[in-house]
Image 1 (cartoon, rainbow, N blue to C red):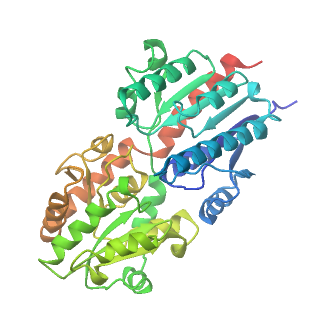
Image 2: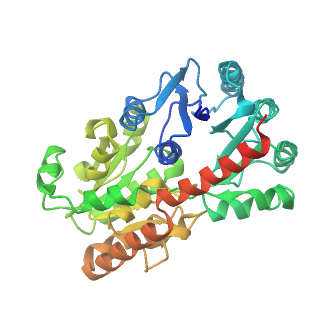
Length: 408
């Protein structure tokens, strides 16, 4: 009789999607036949993520309620958001009640210092993994003290496990957990399917036709950003840099590929910048196509990739651009320097510095040799360090070890 398949569950309870879900998918699609893989996500999630699950033949179930991650500027909004969190976490626990977690692996996207009650309840029942993409909680000292107690409490459960998606995050956890637990934390890098990106880069795609499709002038130098159009991604620094560059030259256009278009208030602020006009082009990712290949093909419209984030782990879009040999600019924060070595595999700027971003763009516009140099070197470091097959092997080894040690 063949051995019963082990159940491997990936769960997140918010509708925004991006690098964390691509990270999950990179593991899911590399599961060997002994694993029965299931994704659980909110029913209101974007069509693109459902398409990616279907494309990779991953079975999924849906949750009715989801977290609300939008800013809560008032006390009433904060209370309502917290109540929604509680309701969502109750549904998560109820949804998982029918599953034998003691003989399964649950990999959940959740912040241990916020969802510690849910994670405690789950760790009492089964094998739980959480991936942290960055770890420097921004909060007053008293709140950080409470969070640290909650975090430390979770680490005493032998079935509670943490992955860090980069070395910077693991180092940041050193003072938050005991030495024994810290030594068990495995680094499963945010990573890229380099086989896919190399095939796309080598394709005979008509770049001019792709630009025409999205009204991107063929004779312009294109700077591309990818991700949610939100403050922590440095959106206003990006626009300030456009304003500065547009006063000096008119042959550069800036494109931002985003899952949701700017709000009415955002558009009002965008219009307040001088000299931008049609030099800033927001593009909706769902207009590109529903497959990951469609999105990666779109990257090829770019001459340079730029992501001036304030807070990041290691952005998947940055690694994808580097893998495609697109010379890249990003900020000297968190784990980004693990991929971008200044003037070797890319250019680093300081967060919040529009002058540096503008200077970096103009430098790459002017120096073709530098573009070629860091484009090739960036692709090589992604292939050698951030290939998803390597990260998936680390994850599955940890799943196996946990499953075998705790199986009932």
